[in-house]
Image 1: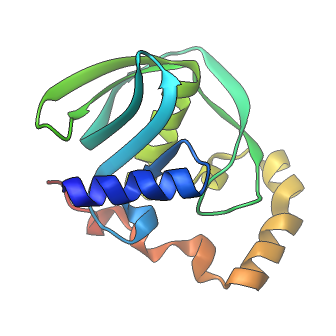
Image 2: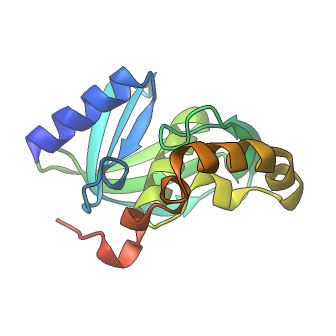
Length: 158
C-alpha cells in the first residue's frame, strides 16, 4: 500500500496536479491522494474515503483532471464536506474540508465511484467543451474517456 501511495504522489507531482485516485493509475482500490497546501497538511492519502456530509451551499468553479489533460470546465459542488477515511499509518480520521480542499476530495472520491468531472457538467457546459472532448477522444481513443477501470463494482475496499 505504501508503495502505491508513493507512486500516486509521484504521478501527481509529475502532472503538476493536486489529487489522484488509484483507478486513474489502473489500480482498482479505494485510495486517493491529495497534495495541497491547505488545512495544515501538505499531502494526505486516504484509504476507503467516504463523504459523510456535504454542505447545502454550492459553488461553481473550473476543474480539470489528470486523466483528461487540457480540458477544463465549470463544475458545481458543495463548498464543504466531511470526509472519513484511513490514513496510510492506519488511523481513522475525519476531515472537515472547505473550499478547494473539499472540491479535491469530492473530485477524487468521484473517481472511486465511477464518476468523472465531465459527468457533473451542466448541459450548457458539456456542449461548450464537446469539441475539445471529441478532439481528445479522437487523439487518445474512446477508452481514454470511458475509463473502464472506473467501474465502481470493480473497485475494491481494503
